Amino acid sequence: MGRHFDGQMLGSIELFCRTAELKSFTAAAAQAGVTQAAVSRSISRLEGRLGVQLFVRSTRSVRLTERGQAYYEQCRQALGQLIDAERELTGHQAVVAGLIRMSLPTSYGHLRVLPLLAEFRRTYPQVRLEVQLTNRSADLVAEGIDLAVRARNPPDSGLVSRKLEDAELVVVGSPAYLKRHGTPANPTDLKQHECIQFERPLTGQVIPWALNVNGECIDVNTAGSLCITDDVLGLSTAARSGIGLAQTYRFIVEEDLKNGTLVEVMREFGGASRPFNILYPPHQHMPQRVRLLVEFLVNKLRDRN
Image (cartoon, rainbow, N blue to C red):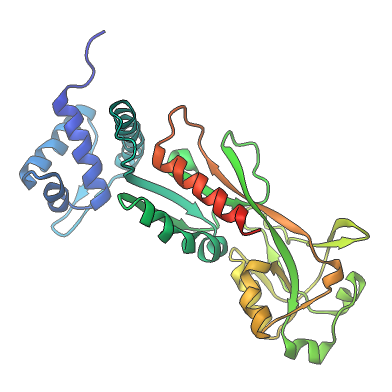
């Protein structure tokens, strides 16, 4: 079988990836220890081979074209696998390095995952992390994302799923709201209260509240004049203002419950939870840095429960 790549072409691909990550020919050249002209020639050689434009260039910046972005995602994964394979064979696997791209829901990212990443970076200082905070369900393969965290049980997407934790739900209200409207004692009482709604972004459906009744977790439909969409943090913010009751995750309102800004109600009907899972594409040769981060998060978040 003939050779598909020569050393020069592989070098061009490495410089292409470095330029894409740094968004600068000059920075890529400095990091690689070559001239800016050498980087430019390598990119031009690669574009000539592929017959496509990879970058949009201007006097101030450089950015990937749509096709360049797709090519970068594939090259980045391929180069990462080559590097990991070489380290494993040569016994240098202890040096963990490279870029990990991850997608996190806003609330879970802010309050659960991001506070842990400093410890991971202290252990593996040569790993770089790119964190996308969004409640949109990103396409991991198409967007070149190494791992994502999602609430609820994931659909059958072909992705590998590992549970991080079952996050407990609580019903809360501000002291001012409870003073004005009273404290509900059971699910039936909720009909007399302003219950802040949350709309699931993907379906546009309002999420019912999950309560434990007679030892069974049931869905309870509530009603209210305020509906939050996309960002779960909006529920606690609205409840804090005194507009109504909200059901949210305990980890979001822990500090509010401690300092009295919010009060937990209907405790005897509490204890319901929803799972958070870490998802990643199936890899025959998962990069070691990604595998280590997955295990780190699974262990850390499991230990918090």
